[in-house]
Image 1 (spheres, helix red, strand yellow):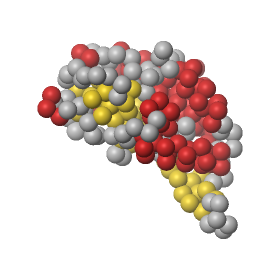
Image 2 (tube, one colour; image 1 turned 30 degrees about the horizontal axis):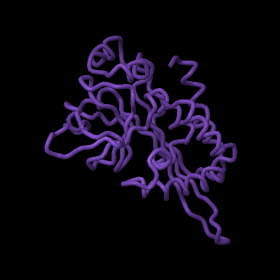
Image 3 (cartoon, helix red, strand yellow; image 1 turned 45 degrees about the vertical axis):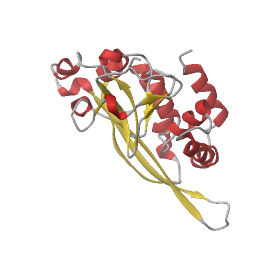
Image 4 (cartoon, helix red, strand yellow; image 1 turned 120 degrees about the vertical axis):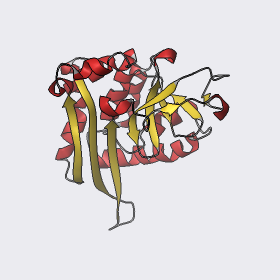
Amino acid sequence: MNREDYIRISRPLVNSIKQNNIISKGGNGPRSTESFGKDFFDKYKYELPSSLFIFYKLTNGFSDYWEATISTRTEGQKTSERGIINILPLDELFQKHSVIELEAARGYYIKGEDSFSKTGQFIPVDYVEDICAGVFSKENEDEIVYFHDFGIGFYPLKVNFEGYVELAFAARGYLMWQYVIVYLEYGKDDSAMYGKSRYDDFIEDMPLLFPDFKIDEFIKLYESLKIK
């Protein structure tokens, strides 16, 4: 990912502020890593899994928040939805309150795998309320970003971090959009039961919130970004 790629994939989110039904918007947006001084990135770069290296060299995290109203099927009534992207800055990423220490006795599992062999830490990178998406620490490193709801299950989203960021922007940070991917990949098992509800909400709400959004294009984008 270079600066031009970053501008390209962030465009759907940047343009969302122009929608009339967005009633509030906040966040810090991108935070140039260079602006923190030449030694800032060097302090953390040896701890970063390689899948995060390029992103954090370009920007020290990203945050965006929006709220919107949506007309419901009941005439005259409206409901509200939110969007959040909260990719933690480097100076928070490795703090003790952020990382999850992998304790053998917890009974963790990775969806689709017979056994759990990860050690060390799980690092939440996009941290949103009761869910997160993140990566395992360097001793376990693979390219995959995992969805985690702070229970015992980790769901491979089957994309690398650059692909995850592109999907997050394409979804405009719609709250818990990650459940859409979980549902598509894993059906109605486990926490994906909730995924069906969010999948239905996502399909119904997104074209109302963002008229240029098309679910078939979003799914096609996901399929193109998947690590085969």
